[in-house]
Length: 190
Image 1 (spheres, rainbow, N blue to C red):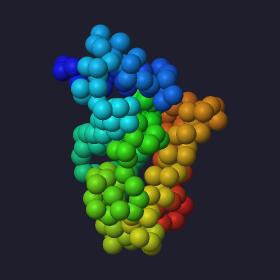
Image 2: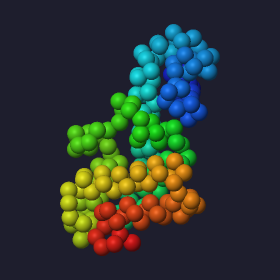
Image 3: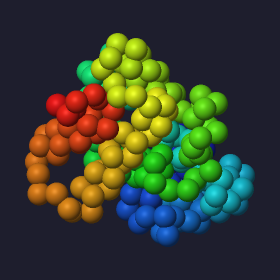
């Protein structure tokens, strides 16, 4: 592992342990066993480190989705949505860096999505368009349906992480799948 990779890994663990306010280049350097100046050789400031963490987190998320393959709806959505819940609950610091924190690596709607810089949402929007042609998916712009569906998932995950659900993980995941499917599927989404 290179020094830069070690700094990045420690920054992620610091985010996990202390949150964004507790993240500092000095603390990361100390835990990496290097001087603050050595950290600054790799990252100009905390914002640059956070951007690298965000890019790394988005890459990890994208690799999770790519490993699922290209499944049609609704199975493809269920696999991706389950992976999203798992990512949020298993790797909360990376999830936050990818989807919650301002890191300058995040995707901004609509420009980044229309330009294809979000392969996961872009792929889902494409599946929604195919589902519309097959009569499975409700009418509407596929990208907007994708964003609305993901918004439901993100909101439920945020509520779960703040202790608002008294459900087992499988029951919570099932609730997420049912709730989000109601956004894009024709009928009741079940």
